[in-house]
Length: 118
Image (cartoon, rainbow, N blue to C red; front, side, top):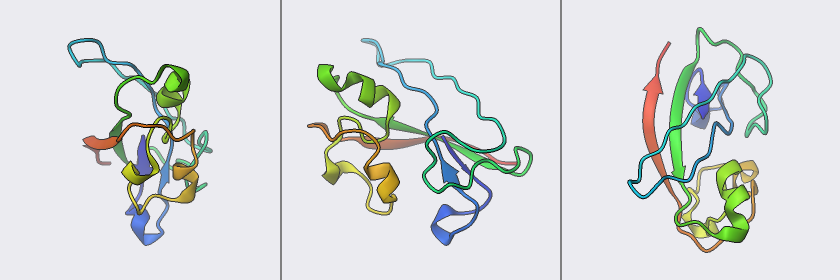
């Protein structure tokens, strides 16, 4: 999940953290859930944390890690990079994101699913 007050590309009080991970069934559907408390985030990209739930703009972004790679499954579910080729990671993302989990053979894709404004 991606929480920000303004744009992270402009050095504002943004941060990014992991929300949830699933393996979708044969239908391609799955259910995600998560909860983030105000304060320090687990494994943050920028170290800003969630400073105010009332003022935050929250972005839910789904990262598709591709087909299951059995020996990388735990990392595919719980890290940003797990199972992805380095070439498939977006260029503007920080090194902390690009080093979160082991690389793998899959081309990974980001899907912006929902934006929640204050």
